[in-house]
Amino acid sequence: MSDPVPVIDLDTEASHVSVQAVPGAVFLRFRRERNDGTVRRMFVELTVDEAMLLQRELDLCVTLAAAGDAR
Image (cartoon, rainbow, N blue to C red; front, side, top):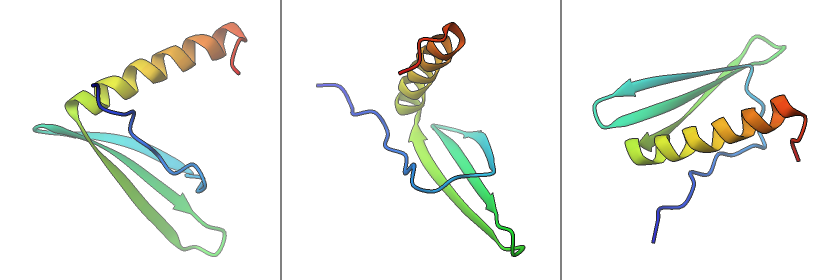
């Protein structure tokens, strides 16, 4: 059985997204700058296998979006 696709909470909108690699893991870092000047930061830690799976999913989504076939 393969590992499930990493779940990312889509209820919060980030104004900045970045990635960072460390030995054995990849971090997705999310930052939300609010109108009142406060900042909220979140991160998701992925194993290398989870990051590779997410990369394949993202590649497919980009290909579909570029072709106008996004669903």
